[in-house]
Image 1 (tube, rainbow, N blue to C red):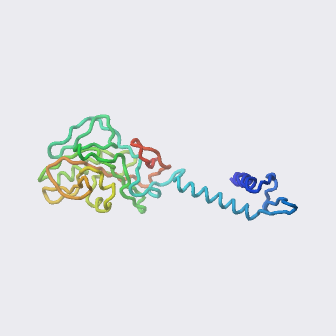
Image 2: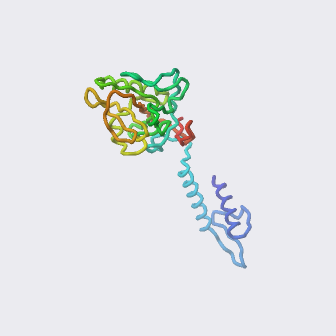
Image 3: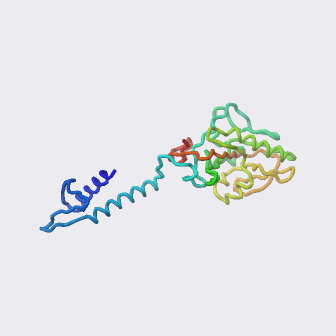
Length: 261
């Protein structure tokens, strides 16, 4: 490695000073050359160039986020995309029309994609994003960026709907997943008004308001409660502790997403 840096420095000095000298002139005491009858020593210039080269390399690595491997929890930020793959649907289901039904997707389509429960409020995003991270447990929690299916909640079934929403999330687990659940009110309260919350479509929270209502998020991002309707469902996945990454790639939706290894 040291020889590589010296070669770089030699080229820089030739360009800067217009003077040619051999590699044998590079000594631990410095480099000297003759100019207009004077001997000029460039030890400090050499040291400066070494330090500058090392600094530039560090800066480039930081800007590009280049990692041989790293724990995901140490490099991701809230809202980052993660190249998590929940697989494909094996069957087709129409949009739900009665209590406890899920649907709105076609066989052989990706569970990472989004569906529209109502055409006028189709989700803006697809894939998976970081919802939160915990450096103590070394875990990262991700959420579907949009909504992969629809759910019908009817009046009077709040307890049942909360249980069904959390159970449905298990369909999205793969080998990287530690646990799964539905998005809840506490998740929303921590997000403010960003695009993790406001996805352009209405979706349920697995948080009830009495016997009849579930809390939900409007297409504009505002929170409310409702019953007797089909709206989006958003699964949440807690990844296993110490999950690794080796940098970013393009996911199937062309998002810059952290690759899991």
